[in-house]
Length: 104
Image 1 (tube, one colour):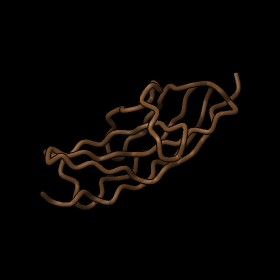
Image 2 (image 1 turned 120 degrees about the horizontal axis):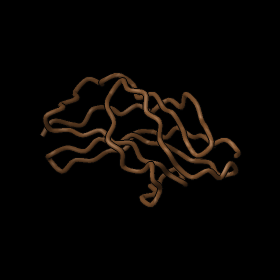
Image 3 (image 1 turned 90 degrees about the horizontal axis):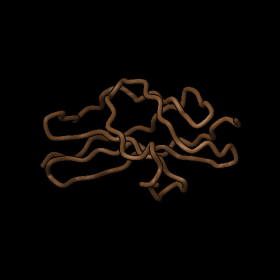
């Protein structure tokens, strides 16, 4: 199978009470939409995905702006990471982008 493309970090463009809006970078070289899927995951630690968080595991598109709902604890630091999976059983996470939601 072809190698997965390099995965950039998403850009946090704004935060709200229990939400975050991110900008997904443009399509990288090597992307094959017929065999690859792009997802965004929330983390409560830099390396461990929080699969119970409602913003974990959302399919996203390159070049899009996406608003995700999540926990509203303003003292918590969250990380978002993009992940590419392929039909060849490949999987890779990109670097994290950190943020905090706004206080209610």
